[in-house]
Length: 194
Image (cartoon, rainbow, N blue to C red):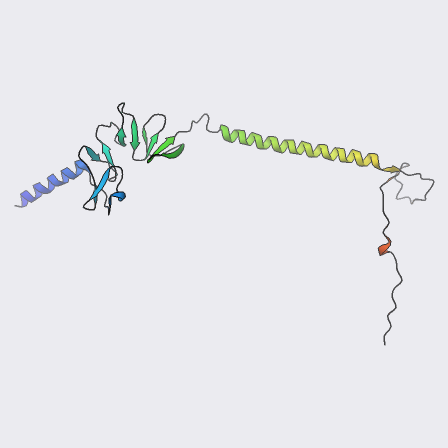
């Protein structure tokens, strides 16, 4: 009797190893593609095998073990993780950008040769913009300096008396100055104490 039980247990383990065991589930949405929750375990219909992730069902005619569904040319149309857009191969990790198409993740691979072009163009544009801004600022400063230099008035040194400190050279220039007598010297107010 013990040997029959052992034999039955070995056969049961072999069947589970061949067909795979599904993950525990509460309802069918807990399971993956074309899998159903039967007896709190994800299982597949006839003609489909349970994928190694225990969640999805896969078509046994596909040559790639990660492929769940393939077309006539054996190009994978549905994978457990990602489908490469250009080759149709299944990928565990997407090196480019992934987008959802239908209910499948499609990975668009980035070319190593062209992958950094956008970043290089952005860096060149930023450096060019900063350089152009610096050149423009320098030009504006030069124009302002020339304008100030030309608009200062020459002063006749004989008409006014100047101290030695004001006369660095024989040709003195002066800016327009406006007198504000509001803060000039005033007589202090007399405060009387009572």
